Length: 271
Length: 271
Image 1 (cartoon, rainbow over the protein chains, first blue to last red):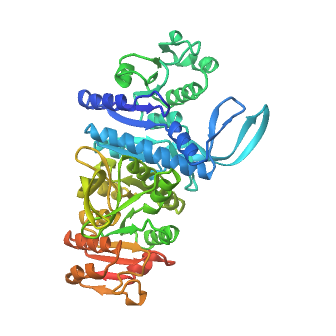
Image 2 (image 1 turned 60 degrees about the vertical axis):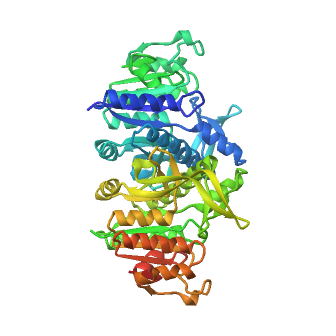
Image 3 (image 1 turned 45 degrees about the horizontal axis):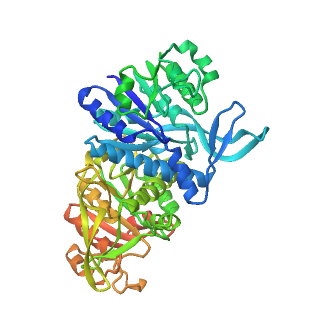
């Protein structure tokens, strides 16, 4: 059985409804495919934090990655916005199309087990600092049995990017890398990372510099020209391929048929 | 296999941590019991609505039941507060105690299928009115297979009171009645409804008027003296018993051992 893991951006511009329509179409035309959706939700979490007078704090690591600093209150905001609303509305949208979607976060059934970072190294105004009390984690294991069970019974799992620590704490995790870990654990044929760009660009933001095919050996080099969040997608692609996933596609989530176009050769295909 | 469905109040005073501790104890001492938790979350939803400048609107039906009017924005607030936060924190609390809890709302996997009311009859200032655009529902079917599958694999399902309409819409449902429907669908031995009172009181709020045992034949009559939210618990008890549940216990969720005390003969036992 072929498995396709689809990561939907949590950012503006990515069309949830178009993706849901494509997934419904795929379900009908290729019923043998096993589909798992993973989503982000940063934009919703930011908006909720702002509305509640508790805006997000973004920090940059010494190696240049940007992430959300997640104290306990931010974690609760994340639970509400991402596990509650984004996941819930996505499940609802799929249910309206007749798909039996089932929302899960990585906390549920210990789907995603992670190591809590606790303290994170950041660079602020050119200085290195350590921030404590952080509830983010690095995924170390996936409960693939749970997904196999649900898939075997015809459910469409929709996964929110949270994980559980060894101590049972809820943790915020990166959605692209969560999707990569899930794809690897399921021996997926394809990991599709949808984003608000046509794919990997050699000269960001020049969309005509799209790289259509990239051999995995040249992924390391891609870290040099990948900008911002795209760095995490390149990292996720590396992890997925190293974990045995057949191919990773980074493609445009803003078009009329994001999933169908990507499976039809669009975006950047990394093998 | 005996099944016990436990409904936790969403209101102040009910001790989530004491309940979680009891559930962990029960899991160790009576591993043969199959446990399902169902929770409310009104207090959290109200608080979030207030914080977002969109306070809840409560309406009273001609027959005297009070419920939340759920327009689309209220439904989203409910998703965030109840499916996101209350359910998430409860799952986390159970995971911290080593229980493999798995959160679900009735929307997920079509666990709770309901008929959308759409318009509701209310009484306001003594006048009957009809309110439209309501996203609440009356549960009509339970996907017991999903719960059986999860229970068989050792998961502890934790259910948030939402349901899915025939059209795939997310709906807010009453948590007591959701618990009753789930208990009936699972042929549960016991439905335990925890609340911020010692049980059913003959003369509310006189706690010394607790009714320790109530034959089901006298439930109808109990509607006369049950006050406020307790009316819904009596209704839920009727539905559960009619659906084949062995006994319903309405007991105090505010004590040190809410679950163990109740299973040990506390509260009001209705058979």
